[in-house]
Amino acid sequence: MLSTSLSEQLRVGVLGAGHLGKIHLRCLGELPEQYHLVGFFDPNPELSAQVAAESGLHRFESIADLIEAVDVVDIVTPTLSHYDCAVQALERGRHIFIEKPVTHTLEEARDLLRRIENTPLKVQVGHVERFNPAYVEARKSILKPRFIEIHRLAEFNPRGTDVPVVLDLMIHDIDIVLDAVQSELVDVRANGVAVVSSSPDIATARLEFANGAVANLTASRISLKNMRKARFFQQDAYITVDFLKKETEFVRMKDAPAEPDPFAMVLELGDGQKRQIEFERPSLVQTNAIRDELRTLSEAINNDTAPIVSLKDGYRALEVAQNILSEVERNTAIRA
Image (cartoon, rainbow, N blue to C red):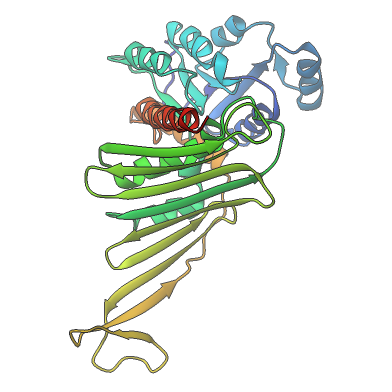
């Protein structure tokens, strides 16, 4: 593995120069203290030539050439190629950033976990909503959620319809739920319908956990408007997160004072107890979540700490997504 000191930039290269790859190239270029962006590789010669001309970045001739020149490999290729790219990088002792879903199959993800076991290599998975400023703020107050409801609705876009909506959109929220609940998943119920493509375009899932928490997830890529909103209910608190608007709001319950403010919202309970409702909408510093996730990977490498979204996290999200897809297929077969 290439060695770096705390004062050195990490040399990074990007595999994939499509829509998301271009965003990664731009974000890495905005992190000069953390990274030296060496260049990129994309198998499409026309696209590669265009990106090289527009960005001035070096265009590598092969995956192997790029891996040889860097400390960190940023994998932003189609999911089917994630595993092969990651294996090549790990065999050369390189750290990895890999977009979601982590791999095409659970077997591939398990093999990657095995490969980094007992090594200093860091692998971070691109579940970008963990870095959304609204969720970062809300997560400080999400303690023991009992019920979670998330809707992720998107207007139709042909890009991404080669995979089920569960792997395209819902997997973001699966990762959020697993991070928030921190308990063993014990039951999955799900349904889905293919409307404009050959795989489910709209799906709903109900997840039940060992600690009693329940999460309802809905994902659609055939909606008339975009929505990415989560609601967390826990003892004495209701927390909303708007991932799209990057806003969060807290509704909290507390014992009402003997003489509450005349404008306060006070509930009188049946036992004579009075509870006061408080609303808070904190002002958030708007940040670039993709840039933040790439920055935190460099911190994990330099400080030898665990990435915020680890390879194991990516595996767990994929495992739940696959369970949801299996349940969708089972219910679809019953209706056929």
